[in-house]
Length: 149
Image: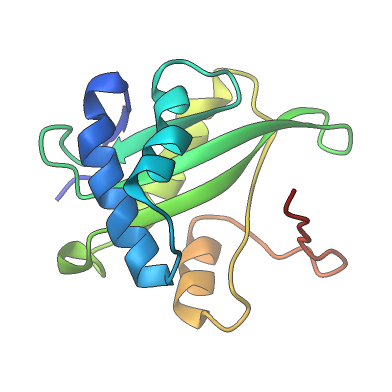
């Protein structure tokens, strides 16, 4: 099983929406398919604020990753936040997520990306191990905070 990344395009919207719905069901995120599609479609149409990648073969993807771009003075330029990462349950535990997370910086570095960030539940030891294997490290002094508008 390969964790090859394919930049998602408008023709992938249905597959990506289905994967996203499965992720949201796993995480208890309540969102309509219409809202999901509205959040994903601009990324597939070239919106400059983020991208979505299919993981695995584009005809039958086994997961996806959404990356949103920003700017950081501290990191010296363009940075990104991994907004969502999902691997189908039937293929988890095979190193696919680790492989995708290691391939992601290579895919984005050509565009001048300086740092990638992510948020993880402090209680999710399995996810924390995954992210550490892929080179991510906690910033002990900092806590990710949000305000919904």
